[in-house]
Amino acid sequence: MASSSWPCFLLLLCVVTTLTINVRADQMAIYWGSHMENLNNADLRATCETKHFSHVSLAFLTNFGNGRTPRPDFGTVCDVETDGCKSLQEDINACQQLGVKVLLSIGGLDENKYTLASAQEANQLAAHIFDVYMSGNGIDGPLGRVKLDGVDFYVNDASTSAYWDVLAQDLKQLDENMILTASQGCSHSAGQADIPLYNALKTGLFSKVWPRFYDQTCSYNRRDTAAFEASVQSWATEFSDMDFYLGILANPDHKEKGFISPRELPGALKIARQHENFQGVMLWNRYLDVKFLEDGNRAPYSDLIYGIVNPSSNMRTRAGF
Image (tube, rainbow, N blue to C red; front, side):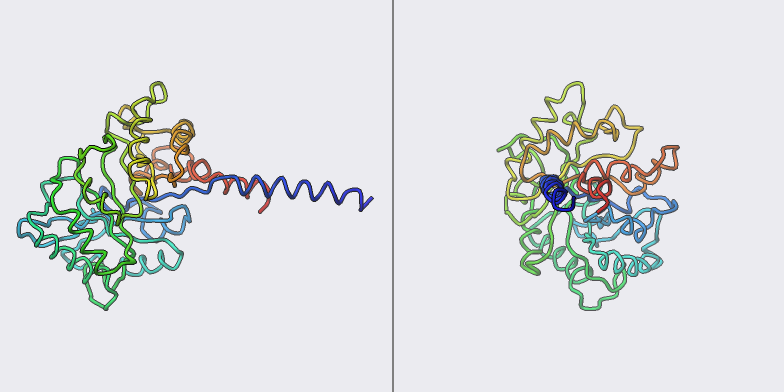
């Protein structure tokens, strides 16, 4: 009996192993801070402790350019002016100990609050970011004594395109291991310098790009996916040297502007997964993610889509791994 059942066990083991290997393990990134209000489980440490996210971008460092002094604005969760954001140091350390990469997102939703007027301003901003947030030299900055993992360029679509490439080059010269990521609206045609970060992305210094597929004509529409498919093709193929993520929105109030329900997300992922450099989704943002639960849904948006984005996690659960 034992000998006859042994080949069956081996066959089952091979099938399960093969399926596990072939399932793609995509990742999730999320923005934290801007447009934030205090909700249970929306704080930074709790965000990382979900173990859903490989990267968390603190939004935003803004108010720079034209002689202005860079200033972080993380929404209502803390007050930089009264040193209230220094308490985030412990949360940042906790996130990093969990293996989550914590990024400083620069720019923001209002392009009038930031710009780079010259190469010299780019040089100065790079030095400021490195010294205060990245150097690990014990500088007691707005976030306390931290060494973040990288910089995310969140540049609004109406921003100027000048000197972002200089900033990226300066940052990498200061620390070649610094992670650089970028977010733009998804409207882009391959080969066209039609986005502010185009020259910066062409430097080859960015490891990840997560275009925003919401509030755009290229947002996902399950009834007509042509514009979405064309945009995904442009981003994934032109910037094939970096990981490509879908930037999606956890706000069902934007159903007409690109919100993708958990039920519809597999359709969008099927298109994106045709490209080898597709790695997962970027979520805007943790406040809206948790608010999704507060508004009467059975879980935060990220909980509902985690198994869809990362199907291997579901398989391991079902198979008892």
